[in-house]
Length: 131
Image 1 (cartoon, rainbow, N blue to C red):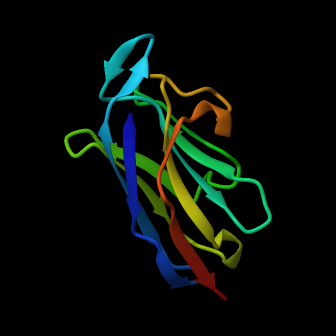
Image 2 (image 1 turned 180 degrees about the horizontal axis):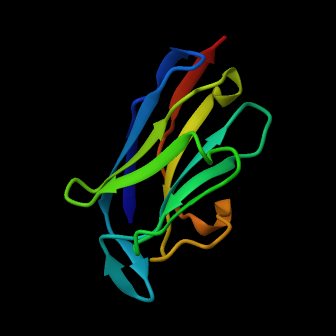
């Protein structure tokens, strides 16, 4: 199994930036084999709303973004530290949410990320953006 621990959330004024980190440990199981690298992604959720996909990073290095993240957020990964990042710039009050890191038992990420793709989730880190 994969264990994920997020950090980097906090409170920031609109227009500010934050960088979220997600340290991954353990193995995903892909086609019966244990793998140290796999599809990972960032999601966010506000109370009463569905969890929303933001960006994914595949084992192949391919990155994808949803409309909510495109242009302002950047997903990246440090393979040596096995840490996934989400750099968030030009933050808006609407970005206020709990942010989650996720990992999947697959190498490449689906073109359209879905919650059901991801078997492993972190505990979340809160981001609050004030006007």
